[in-house]
Amino acid sequence: MTSVTKTIANELLDLDAAHAAFERDGFLIVPNALEATQVLAVDAAFKTHLARHPEDWANFSESFITAPDVLPRTDAFDGVIENARMFALLERLIGPDLAFEELALMQRKPTDNVGELKGWHRDIIRAYERRHEIDAISVVYYLTDVGPDDHCFSIVPGTHGPGVDMRTDDVQPGMEFDALGAAGSAFVFHARCIHAGKLKLGSRERRTIHLYFGHAATPRTSEWTEIPQRLAERHDPRLPPKLYAKAATTASVDGVGRRPRDLPAGLSTAEQLIHVQRAANRRPEVAA
Ligand SMILES: O=C(O)CCC(=O)C(=O)O
Image 1 (cartoon, rainbow, N blue to C red):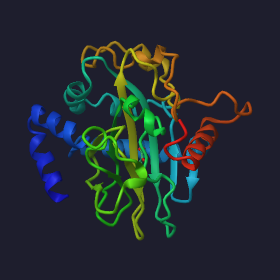
Image 2: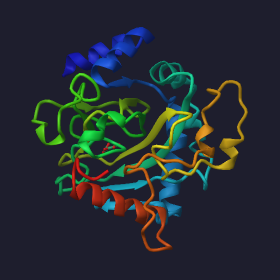
Image 3: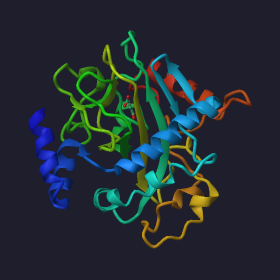
């Protein structure tokens, strides 16, 4: 797998080659996608949010918590969505109708319990027979260094395209690529690619920001992130023209990004998310 990383780093010098590598593997690593000063500022905002708004965080397990709807409270992460270093690549992979969908903060804490809750899965739609409908690209920014002994994002290359018929149950040890990298790196992957969070004994705490981008005129792939007015009204010629078009989209894809309509009133976003993810994990590749 080392050779894959090497190839990607070289190919990224050239957008054509990066695009070809993404078509083949379904992922790319972009070192230094965030400047060091931005990493420090965003990481500080991450920790502040965690301390001040525990109610925004869905606690899935002792090692895994995530906050999917932080933008209405703070503009501290706007610069991550609007990271100019990534737009040429994303426009190449998605097209000129590139649109922002989702931003979630994720903390993976050290744990002795490495039994995985977020095992092998495809994002957005869990049903195997609907896998071709999955059409979004995720950018995961590392705010902490992720080395070989740390919890890491892990992916099975090519399972968005050449290996699209693979089922999550068919993943065997050794097929996967572990996404290691320094703080500031971005890991870009196709949401259709089979992936998981891999837990390691003795890991340091890992903090990441997970963004999703799709096409402006399609239904939303996620209703978990509200796109606030300040972003919807942004008119900045340096940004892709449709970046915040989905603030006005009401239709959504039938999948794990849809807020359930049948839950008791008054549940927070974090509580609703836990409900949906647990249901999907109970019925892997069957539930929407
Ligand atoms: O990075 C991780 O720990 C898991 C992330 C994941 O599964 C996802 O983004 O869908």
